[in-house]
Length: 40
Length: 159
Image (cartoon, rainbow over all chains, first blue to last red; front, side, top):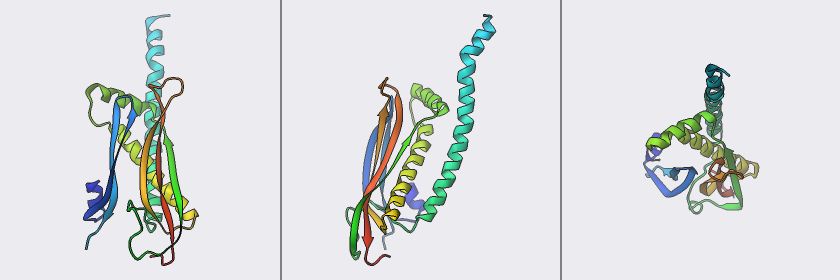
């Protein structure tokens, strides 16, 4: 997430949320998302 | 039946399926990514953000719930790869690209829904992933659903 935000030219990510779900037998997904912003 | 015939029946079909799934799967993936990139550029001016409410200064005239949903299934080749991965553990890259595609597609459908309703932005966006179990055998999965939802807002002073 931080890498993607940096590639967009942002310098902060706000209102981050975490979510997990089991995608298959024995495999789980951890997922973080938020809004990339440029703080002036 | 001679042993060669028996071997080819036992391993021939799964092997053919693997090769077929690998080529069609990667061709479809490449085509999907091309479509995703093109549409992401098109809807770049419509922000979809995780803010709980609209930023100060925005005058909202109307709002509506907007959604975008995708159901995906894992191909034979990726299932085989993840099966191997399950032995040693670690990151399942085959699933990562699949989920990345699904999530971006869900967000694009959310934006397309917002555009259809005449919204200028989407706030409080959330993403959910859910596993759909196979009805006959709950151990096996029938597919994954990725749902994106948020509040589409129509503005009096669109940016």
